[in-house]
Length: 420
Image (tube, rainbow, N blue to C red; front, side, top):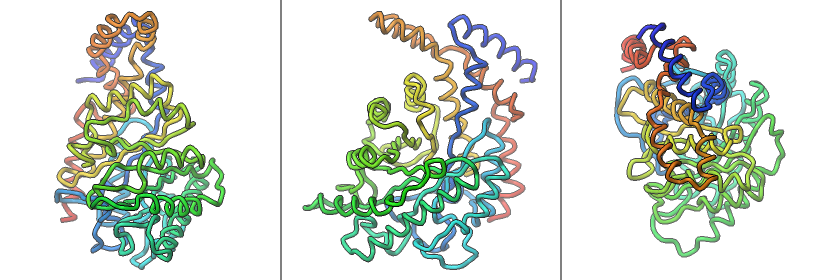
């Protein structure tokens, strides 16, 4: 499809949307202001750069052995830059603490410092993007069934020091790049079988969290977030940091609450949770994944669930209060392509939601004209949003439609294949 054909299709779509009261140019301007935080762990199967022999653990597992995964931080930065170059808009990159430039030295988790991420900061500055951060409470000899909720005080204090160190790194990142770093805390603490005492681990977790967050940090530099989960491999029966626990903690401590789309029952979505949570909290962190039967973290696709999430964010005017990040890892396909596919799908969902003639739907709903509402919702699904997406990508100088895959294939041939 030529640029002229894309322009013509856009002009026709623009008029069709205008007839319904939607300004496509304004929608694209809105979309351009929404950064997606792209996760580092898709690029190397959650391995990190501390040790080549450490098991992931923590209920995490990356399946597949597609050739070309990043083996060093430099390779990961190279791959991520390639992915970012094929995604319209200005986005962010999300690091785990185990992804520092450690120079081949053994740096304990409680000993990591901002200097171990200075090259990441320089890289992000050169690209003009922000960075986000995560403590790594897994893939470590002291991360068995418990970390911050561990019954052993010495072990618990080690992980507390790690959490404190990560907040310091987050603040340093935010200061260096001029945009707040979202530092998200997730722990795998739990039990495989039914516990007798569910309370004590949660009391220990509160004590640990309060110690980690005790030192105030300017929110212009760092935003703290806590992430709950339903269950994981090895702790199917009990999760210390459940959703209810962390919602209460976020509500009473003034930190961000993280909703992860893969961390609930297989048939449970977060769509209805968004407005409920925003009733009480000013901001949240949203991790977008795709669970298949369980929290399997498949590459994000443009399905009904993703579109419904985007619609809720737009309809509720929540975009400015939501930090959107991706969270999946698939080692069975080209990892750079996985980044591009998932991020572009998140943006497509947001664009479709932004283009929705929601004012008309609200008017019908307010009038209790529910038949009209349903009929219009279904008719709007056929609106030519794809023409607007094509125009957005072409305007950004990106390859037309799926031709970005040609660049990925060439990159695989030139770069990734040499890593075998």
